[in-house]
Amino acid sequence: MNKMATQFKLLLSFLSLFTVFSSSFVSAGGEVGEHVNHLSDNLEKYTGEVNWIIKKVDGIVTRYEKDGAKAAHSKAVVDHWEAVDFHAAIESNYVPVYAQIWQGLYGVKESIDSNSSIDAVKAEQSKLEQVLWQALGAVKLAAQFQDRGLLQKVALREGGPTNSLETVDEIKTRLNRVVAKFAEKLVKESVDIVHDTYLTLFEGIEGDLISMNANLVEDLEKDFNVTLPVALASKSSVKQIQAIVSSMGKKLTIARDLLAKKEKSKKDVF
Image 1 (cartoon, helix red, strand yellow):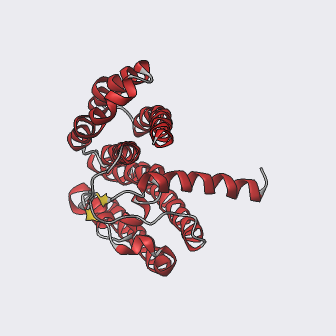
Image 2 (image 1 turned 45 degrees about the vertical axis):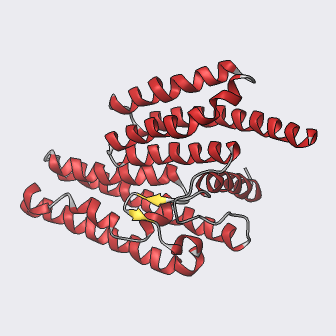
């Protein structure tokens, strides 16, 4: 694949993800900052933060090698990550890599907690460093697209959808948050998001959808109430959860198209 084709593929990926995250966004550590809408202005800071995290994790691994698990204070691996703005920059831009970062963080933490060999711990450390640099690259690419006006602005305050199409978009946003929360090992919170999304959002558009595609509604009802919650509670991998959410996303895209056609027919009548 040539360079232009690769960039185009990445562009489509980012545009898709930004469409999902263009509704109001709240990060795992609280409300995201305005900096996510000015990525280019903050790239130097993000780079510094990635270097800082890598240095801090290296210090933890060094203490583990020298003095053991208790002295290493493995929980600090997660604390350091949540302390930087880059945390919100990647969460609001590219969930797949964001989830991989959490897997990397816990890979280091849990290998230390289980008293793994130093080689095993360093292998997890290397994986984490690689995904952090990958995440920085993703944010740099997003910054280029943002500067060209190709990405929608991330809204910073919560606000409910005002029509059925916005409702579908908000459902997709929340499902991606489910993946992020699950990656953070916040299983209960991820399950709560699924149930709340079904009750407060999906049920509101079910009536219109049933008349157009009852089987689609039935499939999504099962996804919301059985498939996804069971997977979340059964120690599935992040990759498995992402696959379920991706499948639901495709069904929701079909639902959105149906709702858009219905809305257009109403306008045509009047």
